[in-house]
Image (cartoon, rainbow, N blue to C red):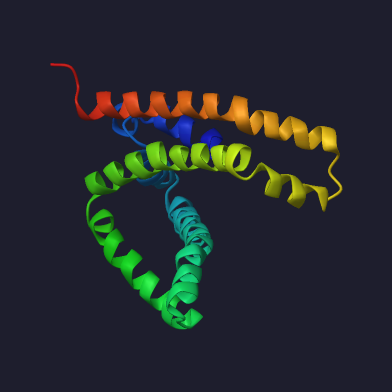
Length: 184
C-alpha cells in the first residue's frame, strides 16, 4: 500500500537514482520530498506519517526484545525490568552508529534486512520441517487442523520453502555483493 504513494513520488520527482540503492532512501528522501510539495498540509502529513512510522518501529521492537529478555531471565534469574533495561541499553548503543549516519543505516539495512532476515526464515523452515516436525504436528493437532493439511505444510516446510528461500537468499547476497564490489 505504501508503494502506491512512494513509487509515483520517486518517479515524478526524478529520485530513481537516489532511492534505488536501498529502502532507506525511499523512506527518508522520497516521502519528505513528495510531502514538501504539498505545502503546509504536507508538513502536517509528514509529521503524522513519521510519528506513525516511529510508533510502528517501537511497537515492533518490543516483541523483538522479548527473546533476549526472556533468555536473561531464565539463565541469570534476573527480573523482567532489569533484563529489559539492560537489553534496551545494549540495543540503543548498538543502534547509535546507524542513527548517526545514513550510509551506516543503509549497510545495516542491507545486511540485516536483505540477508540475515532471509537466513532466519530459512533456519526456521529447516527447524520446523526437519528438526522438530513432531512438536509442530502436536501443536497443530490441538488447533483442529486436519492431518492432510499438516502433512502438506510439513512437505512445504521440508522441500519447497528451503529451496525458494535459499534462492532468495542467494539473489540477495549476489545483489549485495555487486552493490558493494562493482565490477571494475
